[in-house]
Amino acid sequence: MALKKTVLIIALIMLAGGMALYLLFSGSPATGYIETTGVVELKEVELAPERGGRIVWLCCEEGEPIKKGTPALRLDDAKLRAQLKEALSRTDELRAKIEAARKELEALHSIVDSLGAALEGIDEEIGRAGALLEDARKDLARFEALYSDGIATEKELDAARTKTKVLEKDVAILERRKERLLSEKKAKRAELEAQRLRIKSMRAGLKELEAQKELIMARLKELEVLSPIDGVVVYKAFEVGEVVQPATPVYTVHDRSHIWVRVDIEETLIGRVRLHTKARVTLPAMPDEPFEAEVTEINPLAGFATQRDVKRGRPDIKTFRVKLSIKDGKKELLKHGMTVNVRIY
Image 1: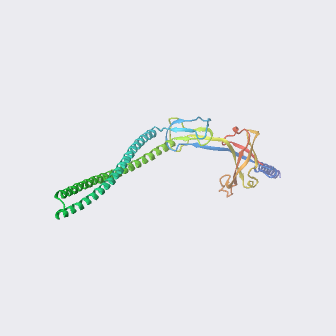
Image 2 (image 1 turned 180 degrees about the horizontal axis):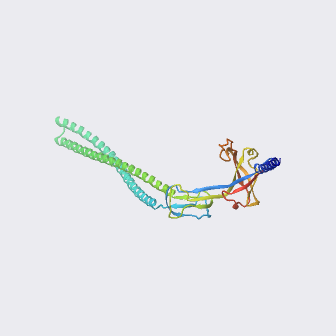
Image 3 (image 1 turned 90 degrees about the horizontal axis):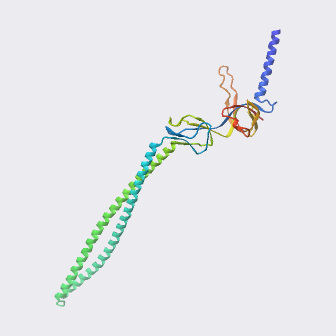
């Protein structure tokens, strides 16, 4: 009988303790709030170079601030800078050659244009000389007829013949001159087209050099890492002179401008949590100095609080992740990863 009484008393004590713990941590409606624990989180960024190499400069030590957009680290870029210098030199040299070739092309255009104008003048001269020659030949035929009839004298006939020969000679000279101009113009046109092709080829080469230069500059940028946020360096993994592999973090930076607490709320209680609900956060070591907070995010997807108990076949408790943004208080006391007490009203 005594044994049964003892067992009953123990059972009642355990039941009372269990109820107390349930009311404390589950947030029973009787309390009007949900009380649990959470983890302090903040924006964390790891600064890592895209390319590997030897570190030649580091900006900060642990605990020092860093500004958004400022360089955090640089890798050895001597080889790439030498390549860039060579590419720039070759680019300048080729640009100068293209400019000289362009001026030569303009000169060839002028020569071709002047030859064209000269040909137009020759054609006009040939036209005039041809007309005179035609008239002279008509006069010669007339004088030959008159001489046959005894009307014209031999002197007049000889004069007509001389005039015709002179004009024929003039026309022949003009025709040969025209042929030379045509040949020269054809040669200059061929030279002009060849010059155009040379310039086109040089411009293609310049385009390749420009692309090479841009590639080298892009690679140089990959050897310098800028901080994407304002923050504080909390971890430095390397020192100057060490070799770092691509995508290996060198710095870890925390942005303390926005601190929040992550809380996992059981599925039986999540219905009581609403966006913009007020909350209070306290450190276990400083329960009398609370931080005011507010629910700013509720994850709609459930997770499991722990791994499933597959041996006993009992389903695990599902939880929903809730984010509490810290509104005021001494935020510098809150550190990333701290466990804190949370009360959601």
